[in-house]
Length: 149
View 1 (cartoon, one colour):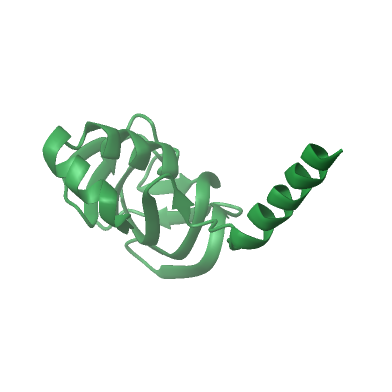
View 2 (cartoon, one colour):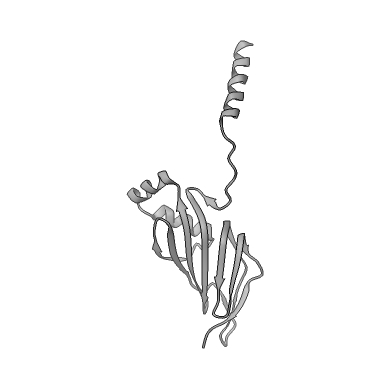
């Protein structure tokens, strides 16, 4: 009986000692997303993503390489077939080909898209306009645009 009471007391202490942490929806593993810029040109998208890495992980990424970081960014953006042009410790540049539907005559449709985390600030730029979204994990409705002649 004394052992059970001791176990309950230790359990209560552990629950009280562990601080409650809020779920960070902008975070995937050791990456915290800050903002994403998508520039649409014809049927491809240039994606610039800015993020921060948890401090202990930065050293591991430096020592072991950026392949895991690349895989995680592709998962976050939910564009597994994107080509990574540049990847650094706080930002990356990617290109996604055939991301928009081509209706001919310079008319394109960028469909709605689901991200795997919440993007705090998302900007989508077409040749005609720019749209901004805050705290969003999907692009609603899609965007129609025209190619510049």
